[in-house]
Length: 225
Ligand SMILES: [Zn+2]
Ligand SMILES: [Zn+2]
Image (cartoon, rainbow, N blue to C red; front, side):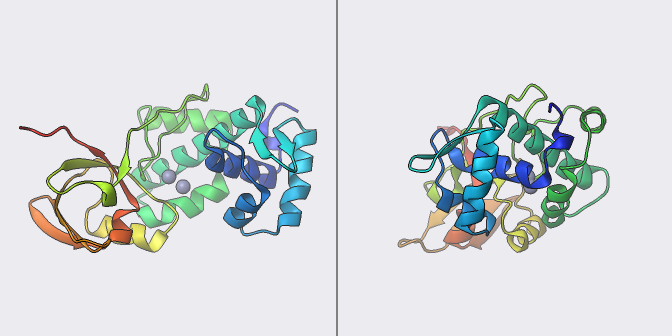
């Protein structure tokens, strides 16, 4: 059992979810159930199966963690997902709010050869259209030093690194108003008590809600003075 094709879609989705949630620690059954919208019992059943395949270390008290092998597979699925998203956007003209859903399905079926062809076609890209880093074939992932725009002090200049890909309606809106990765945005003023934030982008001022700003990740640029 070496190739991904013999791992079911469901196994791949669990590995991907655990990778996303684990953040250097272990993940609880409850967290996984909540993220995937399934029952705790089905998560427990699957974790036992993954453990028997040596893809996770699972302890019903401590939670679950990917093994090196499990992480390798998760990163490969993530790599395919992000390459497909970029391909859909760049080559097939998909809008930003549509790529995630399509990629979630297609990621399970493409071969490494197909992924390589996309990589070459797109010039060895580092990021997907949401700004997520694309893992390399060797499973290396680029770390970006980013903060939510809602946390940035007034007066700072930033560049958008990533948008949260969980809310497709919001993504559609952000693309429409031009707030996409690699765009520069400065924070003009912030209202107290998590109120609206005034920003400047492409010489126009805009007001966005605190919650929306929390879903836009940026890199703060060094001050000029
Ligand atoms: Zn996605
Ligand atoms: Zn993405």
